[in-house]
Length: 178
Image (cartoon, rainbow, N blue to C red; front, side, top):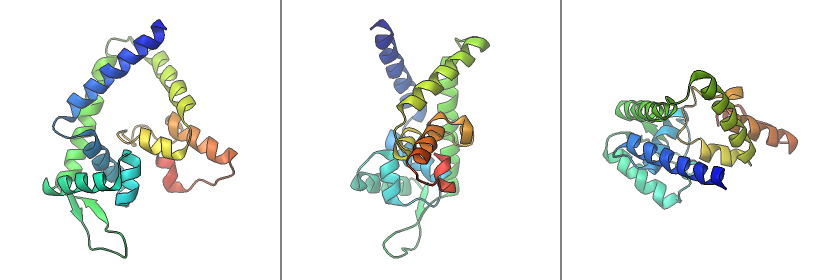
């Protein structure tokens, strides 16, 4: 139970570090902004699923991103309105990602190189074991830097692909990024 208790404390510490790194941007807004940054053709409905929020909440958050000048809604096409980040939105996404990575890296400074490598392997095992589906992968990786953790480097995406192969589903190239 001591390990479980420590894991809970670490989870809260990481949550607090992340909240501070995001500054005045909510987790939902950061998730939508970063998802659009890495998957520019995603729809508002898909964004809501990735961020783990309802469609009305996603719309409200997208409205806020648009008011800040980070998002532009394109001309409606059928039932969907394509979304794209503005130059300011791209800069903000890169800034949020850098702040997030720097803050979390600051936590890892306490570990010597060898222990850090062992910790990374442990994290990968835990993440892979927790992965249940592609939807889980997309939601869990909503704030991840997909340029750093992609393909075989991503334990969550790799496990989601394994599950799909076992279920007889074929991976689409766009699915592999989460």
